[in-house]
Length: 469
Length: 157
Image (cartoon, rainbow over all chains, first blue to last red; front, top):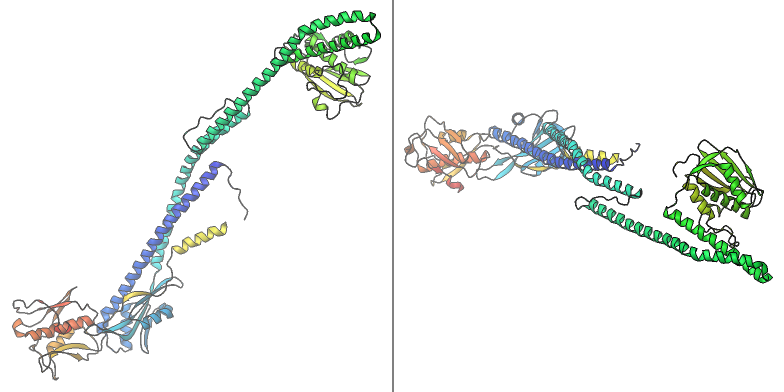
């Protein structure tokens, strides 16, 4: 027998359970009532048959000669009915096809006693066996056995049929309860499943980020308690998220404030550095070296503060690109020329690519990528320009050792440095983060990887006609 | 699973049929056979005595009374009932009372003779399986006051 898959849904399971319980209950009730009814039926028909048996014998007994001869026994047997046996000492009168069904137990009971004995047997159908000694009563009422014994076999098939009819009507009653139970189960399933569905929807909205989602609890049952608990959970998550958001905003504002406050003293420092630079020509060698070191660090500090302010602006969401028509090849050349890198970088690609972009920010990205390649990678550094219908693609590759597997996922993280030993590189540690933010500002993307030749490869993709960021 | 269901179904069906049983009691055994009938006559001392008459069967109350009215025959006993040509007695057996209509006038029968009739009728009734508590009422052709009172046999009291 192949096992059928059990129904999975709550509704199906509820209906099956309801139907089973109903069938069991109705079946047990009808079975019990049919059982007691059949007992009563058997009892009453047994009593009726026995009384009829005794009456027939009692009616004919005074007319029987005693001691009886064969003819007398035949008369008695005929009076009692078919399937009857009458015995007296060695005489015996028997008639009927089922007269020999009498059991030894019954013979013993009749032979020993002075009362009617009955027994039910099922031998090729239900039968009632009745046996009785015929008594002699003295005028004063004392009874002695006469020696005549009468045995009769009576058919209980009719009772059996009535009981079978009772049983089948009981089964029918139980069956009639089935549709009703399914209906009740449907209603019950509805009342259970609706709150469950609402809870599911609420949980899904919470998972999708809608922290305002709540389920109004209905009633006071376990499902309502669950709804209250879910609401409390959502409340708590919402509170935590709000607190976290506040803390993040505070941290960003702090960074912005710090970098802003540092700017004024740095302006002064820059002016001092310029004076120092002019004066360093007349200094002694040691003093000139110290001055040069101080100047370098001051420039680096200025750069760091500027980058910090830029990042803060991105975090605050206050950056808006000024889009204009840009010739890509020319923009790249301008960037390289401004930093004196024209002869160190090889640029390939068509001259005619134009796109809408913020020229200053595009310059920041290119300068950062090329600067990184020149600083950390090895020459030759190449820039490949290409364009599809919707996007331009700018790939900057070098021939250095490339990016390690550990570094690759983190190159765009703030203040991440692939080589911890070289902490004193001129970069602020924010360059690539700012480049990525700028690319995204244009609706584009910046990805890092390794070129086939082994060097690092940064690929910038920008949309050609980005009207809005 | 299938086995459980079929077992439950078999139980259901088995519970709903006629079950075999042990031997059980079915009540009092029938009675009524007897080698003869008991008639009541009067002996020399004037006392009621039962007298077996070998008729081969018990017969009815009416048969017994007919034999009684016929007389004691050639025995030592006598009867206090006058003999007549008509010996037919109409007997009606009720629940508590046996009604006897005898072809005699009340003044023809002595109280002892009435007892003979009552005792013979009640003895035949008891021997045929009737209740011992039953009383008899004798209806004469010419009644006297209280002649149809309910009577019992003085011998069985």
